Image (cartoon, rainbow, N blue to C red; front, side, top):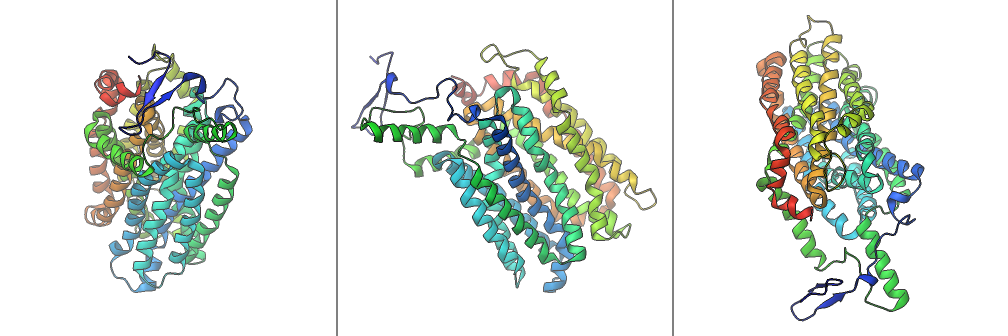
Length: 486
């Protein structure tokens, strides 16, 4: 019979290791090495550094669309779709990299993954700036996306590492201020760079920003608690010569086995967990429609209205402002969340409390899409389609921020896997739809193409509302969630 004060692990069939509680390495109250006990200013710096680095990755993704015309001319490519594949390969790289690199961060810690990824990200941007053919651009943008995936999947986890549970939504909102506006800032910056310099300079600007990101990552200490406790355990074992010291995060399997498990789990959850299936579908389509804007806006403002690339980039300011408003309103939204019933086991609002914000966002997004679609024609004043970006961006901001909160709050120990699976679907759809979007907008026109997308978004509105009302029952039917809360 197992001793109630000890636990056993079985690394192999022949060896049994007794874990004695008095030798467990864990955080003590007020422990200065616990990331949540670091000074407020340094934790704020970490959130800002992660936000900047993630923003660089996202900006690099969408800046590319501003230089599509220049790439066509440089390499004598007649098809715009072929050049747009550079956007698709980059997004596919983000999807794959987010899964693999987030898994590696759970084995080796987040800091090492960030440093290596920041270095290789910059090295992959350089060949694009010097490219002699389109093949180089497509391949290197894929790998740039792959290494950029380190921040897409792990940065929210790093923010959670240093933020108190009470302020998790605020910290994620601050991190997402740049991240959510990255897709919007990309075409604005890229438009002016392309207009006054060249499409190659879009990559040089991204390379400079990646250098700043690397410098910031050198100043960010390791935040992942399991990695820190494992390092502390090894240090104590070495200093005392006593191998009985242990921590709850000791690896019982090889790194390869852990990597395999962590890569399979997000895919398995994405197809077997009802919460992941429906949220991935909803957030994936919302994100894909956002990326379709990078096809629609150049058509509406450059081709139909005759604006220059730089001026057309400013048309995204409506979306960016709407997203910023969603972040600024976080304290108000947090008060509403705290008015919801508390979970008896945690004393905090149930995860579904965050879904009310997603419900509001799900309504605002199609309102903005309808508005933009029917004011996009040149006969309507230019300010109207730009203002349509306010509710559209506001809705996107709410969906992005609080869907992350819901998934993280629901799956706790499996939160990283649920978010990684969400990234695969989100960037997969965002990478594919813009290829068809160009022809769709030219064939149907901005009014009817946008209306079709808005109707799809309206049809998906019930998803967050159903989870808002019945999410607790759905969560309790998930074996992974029940297991993770034990």
